[in-house]
Image (cartoon, rainbow, N blue to C red; front, side):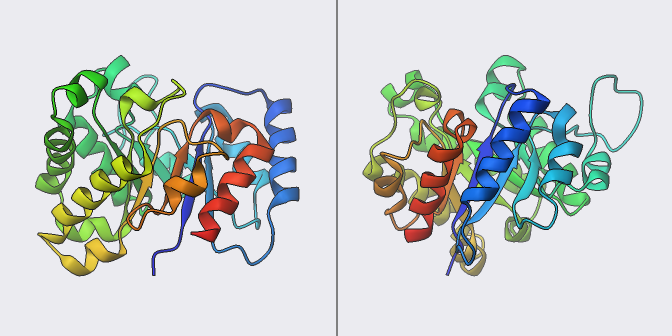
Length: 252
């Protein structure tokens, strides 16, 4: 049985006051005994404070990125060693915004995945296609290529301490989203490709959907058998909306 997982990606949003208010509201709304595992991923500068505010709450903290290098003269970068040191548990790697805006290719994403795991951090590996690629019928080809880049660098056993997030790029921040059936088809393909290497690991691998998930559509998306939760963007900045999404995952 895979435990549902919902992670909030705050992207480049928030001030100390706004974050304190958001966390207070989330903590107030989280019910004891929830089956959903929850994490939030704030900007780098707030990681330490969020770790402190969520101490002993059961809510994990993740970084939105990580350097592929362990240490050295890399101005502006943050290493997995540093993230581990301040109490992070998760790291998002390969988010479509990092791939598109900062030109992070499949090889670099794979190295970041490995860097996170060397410090026992759980990578949340994002994979997904653009609108153009979907219209060309290349969705499964693109997703397979992005997944293969990581599997080629690390053994499939590494997927035993990883989470995958399928994020159709055309559905991020656009208000559009894949239908539950479209999401399920891609999730099933991802699981099948991992299963080709190790069926047991594939069966336990949590695969999230990320693409304009909201409280209104979360129950339908999360009802699919291979959808194990969500990587939530804008909706994670609103405590009430985020809590409803977490509750929808729990029902699943």
